Length: 303
Image 1: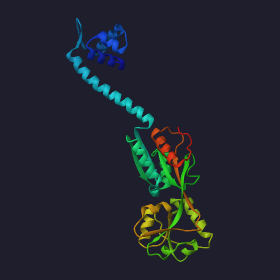
Image 2: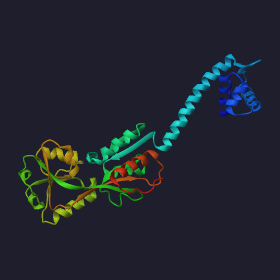
Image 3: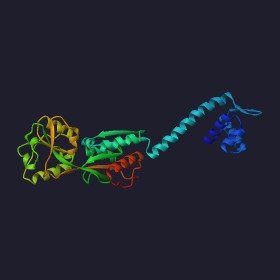
């Protein structure tokens, strides 16, 4: 059985006449009659009663027509969805991100624009540390990763495009004496407790901060090692100490926390989107296009 035979059958059933059906299908009537005979022979049933002035469906033909119309609707839907998937307007997009990235205005804006433009694409978001994101990216368990300060070793074999740079700022309890200062230097942190983080969480940022602090003969008194900035800011809010945080955290306005610029701290966080270069993913490429339109950054050709 061929799809064209089904199409021929439906046309004849609707027209109740081989001549009109052949004109509608732009096929010679003898060829049309032959295809219907082949279809009936294959099914082992008569689909039509031949009348002097046309045809009409047999009881079996009526049942077959109803089922074939359902099949045709399913087929047309499958064709439409396959085309939409190829164009990136239907399907799924898996995005992984480090927790603090969600507070950078660029990312929520990009996701909002993507959802508005492609409402039939299902977006799944997963938050996890950078190293875990890149591992899952290599294992094809996510389509793209949004990370801060990945090292060259972490990016081996992947494409990474910088989207933005964020300065680091001082996070302190609202009652900290430094909160009233207009100008803060690294040396002003002497005597305060700093809440650190695990080097494994962000090796490059950790090393950059240690190097910057050592330039002014200041050794931080680190306590604790939270795994993300939410935990860090919770400890700051509780009065456990000060922390050096991503400037985008200001947008969260966490309770009991004040932020200030450290004038001589020249450390930034590089926000990058990372993906597999050779993959063909229309939904991912649509998201990259939105990021490109928002940032003006150029992206290597995908696929």
